[in-house]
Every structure is written in C-alpha cells, then in structure tokens.
Image (cartoon, rainbow, N blue to C red):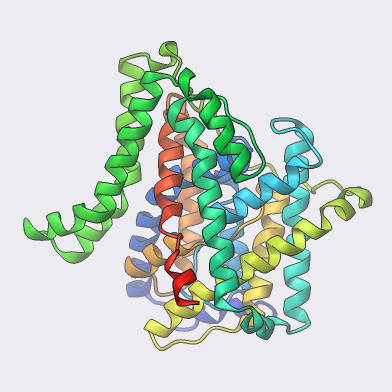
Length: 389
C-alpha cells in the first residue's frame, strides 16, 4: 500500500543486509565529498555556508520517496547555485534575511513546478532539448563560475554581472591581491587538479585496489580543506587578511514554511521555471547514463516528481534549489550504491556533520572553497561541442 502512494519506495522490496552495506559504504564516501562541496556551492549562491549543508539533507529524503534512479544524488550543484544567485540578487541584497527568504521561495516554487510537470506527464519533453543547447548553456555557466571565483582565489574585491564585467573588475583590482590568500588558493587549485588526474593511477601503481584508490582520490577536497584549515589556525592567516568561513551555526536545519507573499513568487516565476528545466535536464541526463550502465531504466515523470519533492523539502528546511549532481552521482554509483537508501544514509551523515562538526570549519579559507568549485566546474566545460556541432 505504501509503495502505491510513494512509488519511489519500490526498492524496499527484498532489501537486505548486503544492500545496506553497499549503500552504507557509498553514503560514507559521498558524505565526505559533499561536506566541502556543499559549503562551497552555498557561498557561490551568495548564501551562508550552512545553507549548503541544509540543502543536502531533506532533499535527499524527498527524492528517495518519489524518484526512480538508484544512483542519483541530489543536492546543490554549481550551475543551479549560480542561477540562484542571479535570480535572488535581482530582488534582495546578498547577506540580508530577504535574500535567504527569496532562496527558500525559489526552491519551493521550483518544487511545485517540477511536481506539476511530473503529474502532467511532461517528462518526455526533455528529449526535445538538443544536446548542443544544453552543452552550450552548461559550458558558458562553468566559465562564468570560474571567473566569479577568481576574486576569492586572489583575495580581491571584484564585481560584475557578466563575464566582461567580471574580467574587467579583476583586471582593475588584481594589484590589491593578498599574497597569503593567493598562495592558499593557487596551491589548492594545483593540488586538486593533481588529485583528480594523477592520484588514482599513483595509488594503483603502489598496489592499492581500484575501489580504495578511487575513494581516496575522490576525497582530495577533504584533504585540501583539512590542510588549509590547519595552516590558517597555526599561522593565524586571518590576521594576514585571508578571508575565512567564520562561525557556522551548529544544529539541524530549521523547519519553516517559505514566505507566502504572492507578489514575491510572481517576481521569481521566470527564474524558477528556467532553474526547473535546466535542473531536470541535467538530472535526468545523469540518471539515464548511470541507469544504462546497469541495464536499468528510469521514469522521467517520476524524476520530475522526485526532484519536485526534493526542492519542496529544501524550501521548508532552510535550503535552496537542488538537482541531481553529476560528480556526486558518479561517486555514489562507483562507490557501490544499489538503492536510494544510499541517499538517505548520506542525509544522515550530513545531518551529523551539521550537528557536531561545523566548528571545525571556522578557520577554513574561502580560497579553498573557491578552488573546489573551480576544479569541479571545469570538468563541465565542453568546447569540443562547438567543433562537433
């Protein structure tokens, strides 16, 4: 009876200890990866870092109840974070209570739209969006994201709403770069690129198994966070002008309804629709790719409802718009996730981190988070699509 109401729970049939162990290992690996990533993407969206953690908890549960993919991991992603900052920045000042309220409203509105599209069985429309259009959009967004994070890498003040404005502002202010911040940021970028490209082959050559080597390579951002945070404490880098994350509230996300002002939602309507479509296309592309590797199938309409439930959950739990992320889903798949229970366990892990570990991130340099974003989104750039098209 329950699976008729919540079709995403069909994976519970025949669930056993072996599946739990496989999902548990995947959840542990994904949780370690997601903590620094979630903090970084929240800052990209112009939100307090804890909001990234909040957006990685209840949305995972919402998707597990209604989604159809066994490996998709939902949460904050770079492109949607940038789109959130652009949409919310038009109606509120970053850092203000109104900015956070607008992000909550945007998540809730996107959730309603996605769920409605799923109930109307519009999932097949995703096939009408051509690959060059989607690829071009994501590539351009990734380039814009990288440019927007250079100010954190260098420790300078740069503004702008498009690529030309950002690059012009960077050129004008580069002379004021903070040497300590630059050293931290550039070192983190170099280290993360090396981890991504060279660490796994190195570990394989010294005799580690493929799964162990892959898990350690995926934990590169965690090592960068730990090392630079330790340096910031030992060398008192904050006194040298290095910007750090600062105090992050401890505890689980507050449960509350988003603002209910109709005029507020009307203003956010175009942005919510664009975020919903882009988020769904990215998510369903990842889900279909991973499902094909195991000869499984996904239901695009259930994906719409699952993403809708995830965004509604984000809207009532202090988060912001979410979708299925490529990197986290691939890690989840490679780590052995067999059912959506991996996502549920990941939500538990993120919750424990938010409740007990946030003081450890007080001295984390923002340059390290910017490096994490830059290395992650550069993998989305596909300039070869221009030549092929």
